[in-house]
Image (tube, rainbow over all chains, first blue to last red; front, side, top):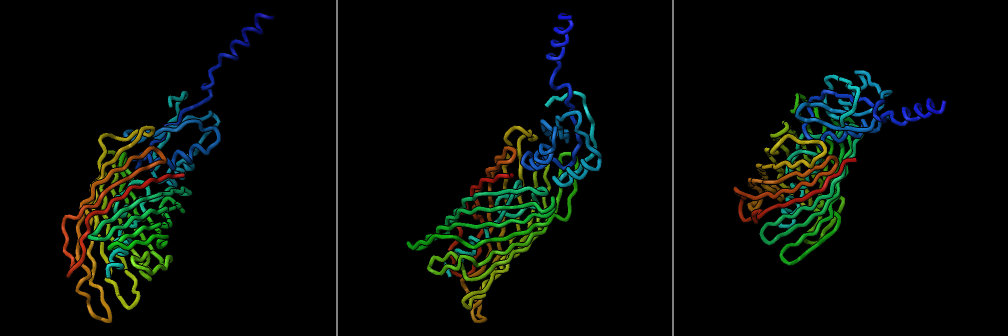
Length: 99
Length: 268
């Protein structure tokens, strides 16, 4: 019994914290400079569960790392990007965060 | 007359610019919806025996992603022929609306219209005066094409110079083009350096008093204006200098020696 309990404790402790995080890769047109993208960072970081933000200007990709519970509709992302001065083109979700 | 020419110079360079855009003229850029931006700017002008130092604070707000309003209040220190004066200058209120935008991968084209009122709030008289005793109104259009390496801007502005003390001051037309360049595509968590080269033209109509055109007023000045932006996310430092390379002023007027500016901007 002790051995089982110990094994369960080890398993619980070794569960990686980022396992529940997902990376949202969003294609955005019009992103050309870091200071211009700051509004986008502010709007995303206000959302509960969003932990990280980055922009690859060359690829036109805005990335956020967020809890798996964070989900967006296309309409929400279109509005969020529009209010930041950009055009939303599409979203892809990855199981692990790299930012 | 000198008093008025100092004020005209100060008003001509008193542009409220936010984020990326030309340094000495207007760009089409606006603030994101709900965003706020402030800047502190130091500006120095030398023209013959006149020297002006101006420290101004500005605040802007994005009502929508296409509509920005802003206000600017300068503190001025003027020196002319041994006399000097300092104090709060005239408050400037501006609105800008971006009515056309085209986004592409790594590129954005846009056109904005803007209007500005510079109100005679300082109401100052002793020479050299901080105020001319009149309001000024500016309207204009600005175009910009920003990409990851190159930026191009062009604008045209017309300033209606208010009349005061029987003097009908000639209005002023500005035409500006600018080119920006950075050595490599920007990275979000690294400082971004952008070099800017502007060509600024200013044409001033003759002033009139009692219906008589004043000989020593009006004319044309052209400037070449190198400058740079250093930005890191929400923070921007920009600096530049305007150097006259062609001057054709009517009658006897002091020519501009140079105008220099440095500003710190912060988004929040």
